[in-house]
Length: 202
Image (tube, rainbow, N blue to C red; front, side, top):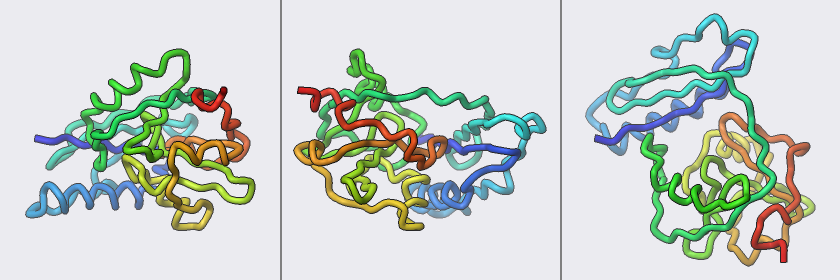
């Protein structure tokens, strides 16, 4: 039986962007548990009192029902370099709790902080985030992500970013990249020069 994962940002004692996480849960239930009413995250999640003063990551593992909810203090790890890795068969279109295929690719990062996954010549994601690229005018995100993240969808909905086909050969046309996920919001101050992608250093 498949198990799924949601990672929810908890800040100032509040679950952030819960609607987008709920939308993804409902997508899972339509695909895998169509005869069962979907979980309603707002009904099953309770905030510990300690979350009012610290930024926390809420990790939810579920199948037909909730299996685990845990809160850990969130301390971001800066990512300044990405190793290009290729995998033409990887599939992570749902946020599975089993991340072994991604962990195999991450193990190839060498001295870099993370990997940038190329599938059939097209840019997808890093091992744990969607990615944005700056072309001098707009922030763009590949239209071929492994996973359509909640932050990515929210930024598309409010027109902060645009979606575009991005191939490996397109990367040199960008000046910066930025990683985004539920815990890493859009912040141009954390943009990294495109030379941080190792294959573009030469």
